[in-house]
Picture (cartoon, one colour):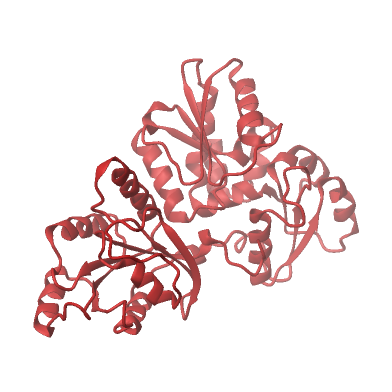
Length: 409
């Protein structure tokens, strides 16, 4: 991935919902100005979420997602609807498409009530006005009953698309940009040393996403990013005339980096930075305490927000289970989830160990944390578990006073 490309997790997520054959796919084509999604008069053409990234000024980078019809039927239809609700979890702005002829039915009203409960900003689009002209009085009546921003469009002719874009700009709320990774840890002109091991798991010819995003964040705040490998860290630090504001490392190099970094220089990991940006570190500390109390009957869920080829000594399937067994002093049961999949039976687990979540947006990560809390399930983070196992967690959390206080308590 180029550093010039904004990752999907850092884009405003605009998602299009509605019943089958409401014209959702035609609408995303009209919004993007491309024949991107397959359209057909046959209901249920869209079977899986379809994503399109673009720039929408003055908002900036967005990802627009077309979804399967909410009224899909049958066993496969139920699975498609389930995927649509997975998209909803990470949506910043929902566009609900309804028929200009029918207006808003009880079906859409029920879904709109769900959006209100989730506090998801919403725009209602009355589509296909070229086939079913909607009178001004009928439109005003429908809009008043909804008490939501609404617009009439024809995705086929493009009529009203400009007005829809204006409504999107007016109603989009995006708080991720306010939650920087290092903006409160490094000031303009200061140096951050990034330790980026290059091993067989690293993509050839490029840095992994967390490293890219931290570098971008440092550049955007006019700080200086110094990149080195773990075996060159000591030499790198000795060569600097200015003491760095922080050292940030891949969690798997924690032990060596801790040994080579003077104690007066703050140190943490990419994974912990992302856990803080996407969620909250204090509950992650509580999750570590729960690991100490595990028994052989307990289940641990290990979750990664992306999918990748597993290596022989994979962090999620090999190393973390090994470290947890060492903490417990015996065996426990492990299960795994990756990508957008997140188990419904979350209450079956004693602890969830989650990656930093660089591929997930904050809304999705917040949902996962809240669901764990709702079921009384402890949750922690890869980087924090690794630091805890190596006996350096207090040092890794020192840059974050609230998390350090939770650890002391």
